[in-house]
Image (cartoon, rainbow, N blue to C red):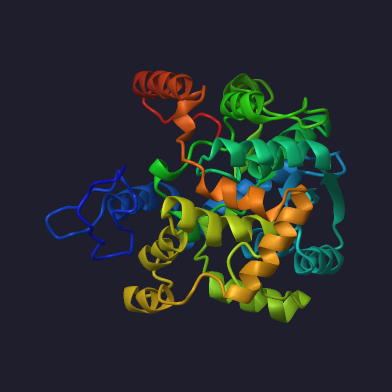
Length: 381
């Protein structure tokens, strides 16, 4: 239970709903300081970024010489991955575009993906997740009452990309992940979506059937096999440019007829309900705070603008009722079962087996190797 006296950062809008937040003497939180530190290492919205990315583009093209594709691009239908798809086309890369359909796509997301693929002339491979697997795993997570309910979707998205890249002998995976819009997120709120140990433990305790086709990614695969044996790399091109989300959305609208979602992550019905109802109601976590805080520290919004946006309701009563009804019907549970799941005592993901200790050990080894070699040796992430 969080017993901290309420406090909100004077620079961003992260507050003590993050149980691990700290503040300096000026009231600025640790997330802002960590963002500044990471930005110096990872974000290059300048000529240096253009130079670095131009070199990377050439490396990707050389690695894919003689093959049908030189990279794989995961496309969710959200603004970040959609804008990246547009830029990849301009850079002259030859991506195999992959979309993972976990059963919760909104109709608008499907239309946006189709518009982008058609405009760029991409080949699209859609991996449709076995619904009975997904349903059983998501119900297991709901019964476990942990905060990171989106792991079931996120894990299969990442694992599908990496397995598919291996089968197609593609070394580079392009990700829309970026520091400018995702640079702040409290680690106390979630565990790693890659943690298959945690996923399997939760499913073993609360699932009702074996997962028939749901393909996970192991710790060995994630941090050793793919990066060092297969020499695969996940690169984030948006970190090499002055990425502005509002400008990116406008370009998508004008170029491909992209239609914006009413709210963040509107491309997934599940994620929409999870972030805008489940987390705030059950855990007191408003994901708008880290999202908007990222935009503040990257210079895309002012703090006053964000404070005003935070006054807006997460849901209208009518829209919420529609989404809960759809959610229950899709998962084949009653409204009573849903209400009982919402009232059930909460748990933390660390109450179940996980790979956190292995990851910490690996990071220690990484630090020793980096120190010995005099250069940064990063594990796959």
